[in-house]
Image (cartoon, rainbow, N blue to C red; front, side, top):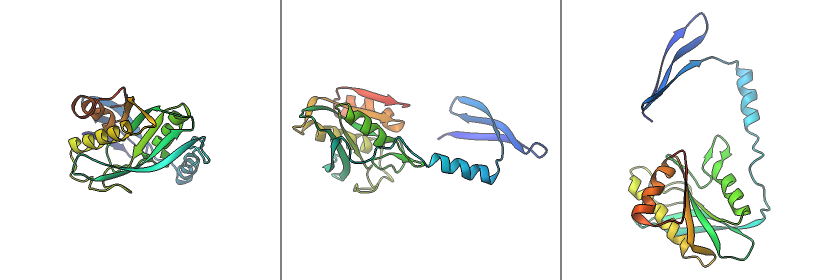
Length: 201
């Protein structure tokens, strides 16, 4: 992450005062201890995720697989389709770096499950898939280049474009972090998209 925190421990105040920096940006930061009971209470509060959709969904979901142009690995994912007759506009969701599955879960929050649910309820087909080497997808994430991941995503785009239930000319990408960083590259180098949604690229 090219990030660091440098601080000074204050024994009297029981804090660490310092500076967090990442790249060219920096901010002052004070670390303060909390009681264990308060920490546990906070953890139990965040475990409730009312935004997660619950079955039965008002749309169809299908477990799918497709081949990547990068090494021929088979990638697995979930395709959400509106119940209304298509063809529909469609989007592929791209995760950030790390060993991420199709729901892009972090600390109990299934980011891409929530996003896919919202988009599908609004008439957009959504494909979210496990990164190579994660969960049900073949291959290895360790050692994979950004080009490998970009070509995986380009293969996902082509997979959606070839389905009769989707509008081939209305298929795009929404990427977060690393996914948002490589999305324009995918569009310019590997597979054209109808639109790009870049979240904190």
